[in-house]
Image 1: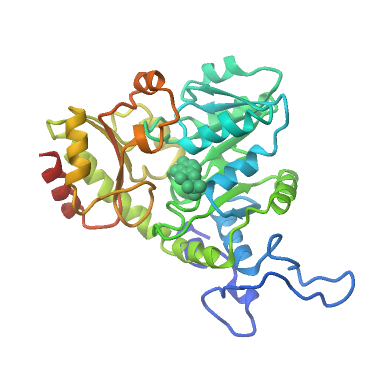
Image 2: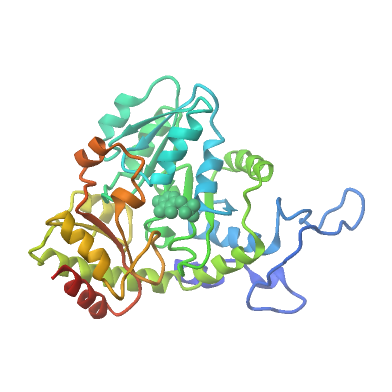
Length: 379
Ligand SMILES: *Cc1c(COP(=O)(O)O)cnc(C)c1O
C-alpha cells in the first residue's frame, strides 16, 4: 500500500470493530479487560500493556515506517528515555552534536547519572563517527535534518558503519516523518518520533513513538515499555491517529509553503543566512535527494542583528512565537533560549546557534499571507 493510503487506512479497522462497522477507531477508554477464562486473553489485559485504540495507532505508525512494531508513548521524550533504558552502566552512545535540546538534557543529566556516557559528534562526517567508536560504544543516535542547523547525516552510510561495529543506529525522524523519510529502510535499527509534531500535526496533543524492524529488539523495548509505563492514553492515541489521516496532505502543503518562504527569505537583504534542506546549494542537498522523498518544512534563518530578531518575534501577527513544530499553524522559535539553552554559549556560537538565529515551522496557511507577515516584521 502507498503511504497516502496507509495514512488514512493504516490498520484494518474492520478487524477491530466488526460488530459496529465504525469507520473511526473508537476510543477504548478502559483500564482493564475481562479474561474469558483462566489462562485465556482477548489479547488485551491491561491498558498499560495494550489498548485497542493505541494498538490501531501503533500498527499504523509501524506500517508507515515499514517496521514490524511500533510503541506509542505519552511524549517524544518518553520515547527517547525508553530507548536510553536499553543501555547500562559503562555503555557509550555517539550522538549528533546538533540534537533536540531535550535529548541533550536527558543524555547529559539523566543517562549520565546512570553511568551512560554520550559523546557528541558531527554525524555529517562519517570519519568523525568512526574515530569516536570505542569498545564500549553501543549506539549512534542521529537526527536528520537536525535541529536547528538542518545538518543532514547519511543514514545508509552510517548504518554500514554501525553494522560493521555491532552498534545500534537510532534515528529521530521527527523532522520529516515517515511520509518523506523511512530510516529503517536505510538501515536504521530504531526510529524515534515526537508524534506531537508532524504525525499528530495539529498542536493539540503530545505523543511519541519508537519503531523497529527486528522482533528481538522489539521484545526488549516491549519489556521496558510495559515496565516503565509511559504509555499513550486512549484519547491521545485517537487524536494522533486522526492527525495521521491527513499527514500526506499536510506534508505536501507545508513543504510547498516552506519552499516559497525560503525563496522569499533568500532575497531579503536583512536575512544573512537561510538553512533549509531543500535549497540546491545547501550542504546536505544531495544526501537529502538520495535518502528522502521530500525536504519538509523546517527553516532556520539568521538576521542581521539581535535587535532585529527581537523585533521580528514581537511584531509577527499571523505567525505565532511558540515552541514546537510540525503542526498546521506556522510557528517561530528562538533556538538559543527555547530549545538550546542547555548547550554552552561558546559551543552554540561556534556552531552558528547565535542570538540572530530564528527557526520557522511552516504550516498550511496561505503562503502569501505568511510571507506578508514576515515581510512586515523583518522590514
Ligand atoms: C519535540 C521533539 C522531541 C521531543 O518530543 P516531545 O513530544 O516534545 O516530548 C524529540 N525530538 C525532536 C526532534 C523533537 O522535535
